[in-house]
Length: 212
Image (cartoon, rainbow, N blue to C red; front, side, top):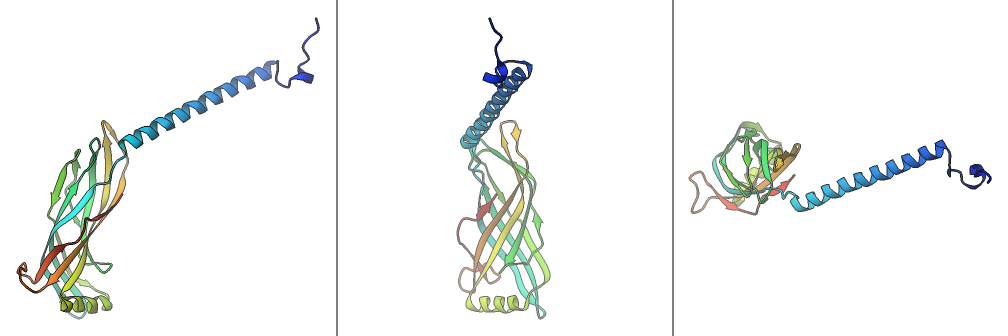
């Protein structure tokens, strides 16, 4: 009986190097299958427990002070009532940092007010009523003119912004940090019946826009 001719008929039919190559090929195939299985498992868990971003509402905005001082300075004192709802049934939210401030036509007019750090459980609701203040904030000249014109026209639109970081909690697992940005438009009418004593009345516009 003649010996098998490995060189002419099969490049990897026998020999030590061929056996090693086959072994590594099986290991790579097995490793690839394992990685694919883990990725599929993570995808399934994500689709089942995919977190829904929290919902924010601006329930009220009281204006204590919104006055131009000097040629181009603005002093502001507001109290905003914000409501946050976690709509997830199986996912909690850790708010690690939340800053609230007011913006007029793209310019920040109050210093950031930090909200208390807290955990928001499944389907929980949180309500905050921070004061937002700014003293002698320099305004761009066109904003001074715009604010005067808006008050004369009888309406002022101010955006209440929330910026911070959160983490998701699923069972005992806690995610890394995610940025959260919230924009709540506040439509204020000037003058007329039903004012808050300072010349402004808050008119709820829409649900706040939330980006996570």
